[in-house]
Image 1 (cartoon, each protein chain N blue to C red):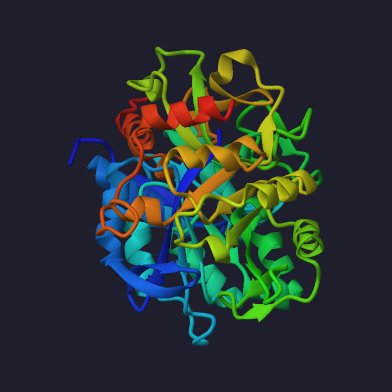
Image 2: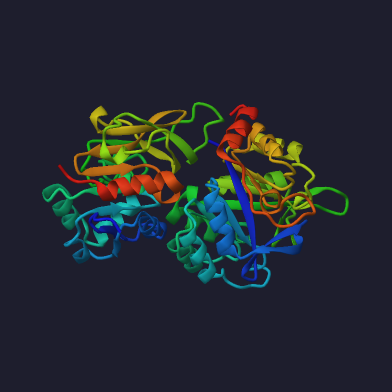
Length: 211
Length: 254
């Protein structure tokens, strides 16, 4: 086991978190699955997973009473948080997928659906894809040169400030696949299913020290 | 990026390999096999329980849970899924995608509910293409036992319209035969559909994997070539190295 802080994986009812604890175990990082707002009070580091739709995920967070405590931990206390896949998307403001739903609004950006220029571009974007690092000095990207990750999604950020984009993937065109704004980080792909590359990324998050 | 997927068949707690969906030959303990594929850093793994539906039993949740824990690449599971409760359980175990074959044909309401909750990308339709006595192609359910009356291409299109994120097509007459893919049929299918197609059945060499990819398949799956040393020889779990895969993609002009 490393000295890294225990990671709280939020299980708020939006899809499978099954393989995230397993991957963290492989990294030698302690994790705990949290499925109540109270359980987040002691969190030092959070992983926010999610599969399904933007609206459903936000609905689950609201119904579970997580919004206030998440804002307190992430915005006020500034503990590190990593959104994975849909968990990354809800860090933003809104998504074409669920137009009437507001996201967590921690990051200045919104999402739109992929536009397929021709038939070779399939939606959802599904499968392994290389990432292109935009900011290789960021601790989340340590030892991830020429890495590839497993992506499954139909929506992507399109209007993020460039400073928040750590890496892009290409599916018809470039889109942000790793984003960060101080303690708030997100990956569009699934590190927990991206064998050695995912292992490295989760290790980097576990070792991430807030400035 | 296209995917090259080992397709592993589960039968009574073990992995087997069939020929034309018959004669299951024991391959090995599932957790060991997954562990070996982990080491090869495979792109994705498909696991199909080939008897669950016909024996009318639910998925082997304990075994699937062990496999999901062991596997560090995306896992798709199919076999015996026909109700929301079991689907929910499967996803909670860490399975990325579920595969519906018989239920996709029989229960559209169930399919819609799964897609609404888990998203199109998590739900794969599986269609087994077989030949009738006159050599005519049809889609089949129930592990090749029940023939669908509808023209198979119309059936495939209906699945696309239902919102499945991918369609996995397995060719019964190619299964385990090492006789090459049915490229003509694969090409006509990929030309008619917009959803990603996974083609399975008939791979005889690693080189042959290039063929479905070069005619529009988004992924290619195979059993025999990844679990046997050679045709007619013993079990040897294997998978191409990354450099070889890059070569395959280059040949397919991808």
